[in-house]
Picture (spheres, protein in one colour):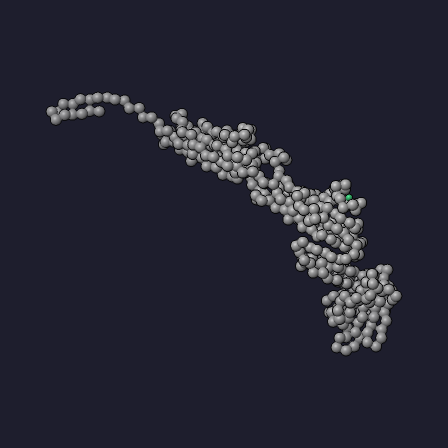
Length: 383
Ligand SMILES: [Ca+2]
Ligand SMILES: [Ca+2]
């Protein structure tokens, strides 16, 4: 520096000033789910140095400090030469301190920057299902009762139910206890709506065990099967997971869904040229059942095949044609067709109740039914 006074004299002094590199500033953000066994990414890229001495991220110093009582190996960090980011998985819940210091290319180190990350526990799934209390056996299905189970399990923290195992045990000696019985696996293919078909009356206890898979990203190398949360229905009241198959008294108490009941009778006979219609009918029957079921109609579908063992005898008087299906003495069904009047062709179908012997009308008169009568046998099909 040179100064000059008013007399024109000058003097010069020299001083060396050392310009120190600016101290860099550490900062990080984190993303991911702060939950046990999930991936959390820490990113230091918003830390900064100066234009002259930018940061050297390869010299980042990260510190992950577990909460009191949690061992250091509960913190799992993916090995990577890139220190700008860290992929971390916490094996236990709690408040973790995370610290970062950065250095610039000159080696100047920043102050520590720190955040506390609260890691929440991975809550187990809640296993639950609906079923019925009592059910009767179905004469149309080899006298088996169909016990339908409906899963209603859920994850309270956003995970996915990925495995469902259904088991039951049958009170084989009817002593009211299940503890002396053996569990049998009904389904283990993650089916939410299995059905147990059984022809043995008595009580059945059901159990559903579920396992979840992660609804959020994880780091697989740090995960073992023990990290998968599970639940079962053992805490559900016994009465709500017990179904009784009963002999009589068709009292079916659905917990949730009240189903309408319907009797539907299909009678098929010697069809001759209508074989195609018959096979089409057979092919469509399953879909028809599904449609009924989807509309909460509990259909008792009786398919009487008169081409088989059931004999059909026709009679008539001045007003009606009668078709006796399954013999004239104790017919299983009687079809009565109006011969004349405004209701010609209208018919009523009776089913003979085995317990009382009474004929009970199951399809009322004027039902729209097409018919084809020939020499004895009859074909009816709904139109
Ligand atoms: Ca969970
Ligand atoms: Ca028992």
